[in-house]
Image: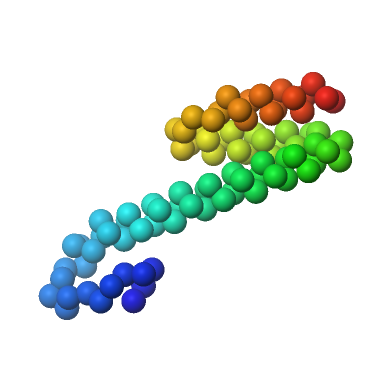
Length: 89
């Protein structure tokens, strides 16, 4: 059993398994991206509180890049956070 897949019928072609495997990997990538965005937002907040604004902005730019790739809303919130950190410099 690999990546939570159930037992496979021995007559199943390897090509028949590809769509299911792809879907599994897509879910894993999405989960990792979401976790990375949350971690970067937390890190940016901590860095900003320490006055390390350049590093905080770098974290926020990474989050924004991930949000662009995901095509999700919420980018405006990230831009506002970037503006806030930039103004505090």
